[in-house]
Amino acid sequence: MVLAAASPLFLASGSSAQFAPPAAPGPRAALPAEQIAPGASPAPRLVASFDGLGRGFSGPQGQNFGRSPSDNSLAVGPNHIVQIVNSRMAIFTKKGAQFGETGRPLYGPVGTNNVFRGFGGPCEQFSNGDGVIRYDQLANRWLLVMPIFTRLPRRAQEPATPKAGDPPTLSMPARADQPGPAVTLFQPAAQPLDVAENGRVPPRQRGAGGDGSYAICYAVSTTSDPLGSWYRYEFVRPLFPDYPRPAVWPDGYYVPTSTGDTVIERHACVAEREKMLAGLPAREICLIVNDVNFLNNADVDGQSLPPRGAPNIVVAAGGSQLRKKTEDDALYFWKYHVDWQRPERTTLIGPTKVPVAPYAYLCGGQLTRCVPQPRTEMKLDSQGDKIMQRFVYRRIGNQESLVAAHSVASGADAGAARWYEFRLNGARDPVLYQQGSFAPDTSYRWLPSAAMDRFGNIGIGYSFGDAQTYVGQRFAGRLAGDPPGQLGAETVLVHGQGAQTDTLRWEDYVTTAVDPDDDCTMWYVGDYLRTGDAAYSTKIGAFRLGQCGPGELPK
Image (cartoon, one colour):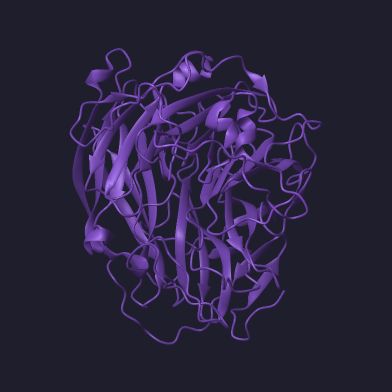
């Protein structure tokens, strides 16, 4: 392992590496809600780790040399771990009832379009980036969402392009017979679509482009086995469906998207979860919202449901990079109520401003050069303009919590992982319960992804680096009884061993997911570069906080 000469020391301890920060240069002023020293909680325990997709990966279908930035999506089921990075996916073993080891690749790397093998149309034809995987703990099923970024040939009847202020719009199903029969997709003997050969990715299957609409593809597994069969759906999207962030809620699969980086237009869409789980014809409803930041929908963790009929909560950071407003002192919330009996009554009510400690976008937002690296002039992007995935909902008894995180500027002219816990009041309005900007030294911590376990403990994974330290991945947490706004010591998942020099883009997003087996082990994935590599590898790790371990799960 090659580190810059001034890199921080770390101490090996069993299977984890605990960070020993350098001596502080002296007292420094903290910004509001900024934490400039680790709290008293011990570092999370690293209980498993392995290389995922990227330069460090070799699986049954070969190697994966992905392009930057990585769109890191991860989901964990009873026996499997599924990862998607950009347009490629892989399936790994998880130690437990079915497998004796964690991290052995069972399938991949293959294009995400393999889930749509035999379905036809653009979902099978194109292996697009921004595919996202979720595990629906409420139904013990997998959900995969893949956008189609190619304009398709114009249809005989193209849907009208929706705009802000229009009533709810039912998306046009792309085919009358969907989902069709459930098909077992991942047969080891089958040649995957769009497979990488000799380290080179062949040209994607080409179709006749057009000036018609785009599309978005859904796949829902029929069991908890991702190697089994899936139901598949395609809906026509007149607007470019960028940056999907699927969220599980009892009454729907909520999938916000964006028209693009140069317009301030968001799509608040929801698919008919109950019908998809049963393999029946399903609908998708969309509303268009202008002049707001990227949206995130509340995503259920655990099996304790929100009250029947409770609206889904939607969140966005304040400010607007395109309007050069990169600071704010609030987050903004909506209540999304879908009515499948009378879709025209579907509502998105908001935004409601909830004051928080003032913040400034790290690096002034996205697509900016900001985070330094050793031995290169290339600085990295921070995605500092948006709340990151996932926006987690957790119910513990009568307590309903929402956890969010984003990248903010720190008082040391570096980067901090800002995180929040909101709690819902009797009117189902989010109320700030605690917040913090984790900046215990002068290094950069950014692109955070947070989760809450069944005990109310919070864990956050993030990228870490500075001008002396190659970018790696770390994880910090807090126990439910810790002082509000405090994270404890951090654990190193992986140290970076080289600088990224070919592009400023570094991880559009990462994922922290809670294991459904114990409802407290937290799985996290993020990027790093190995010595001599020109592009990223990914590292997947499992962490535990406090009393997490075997035990009866809450009902």
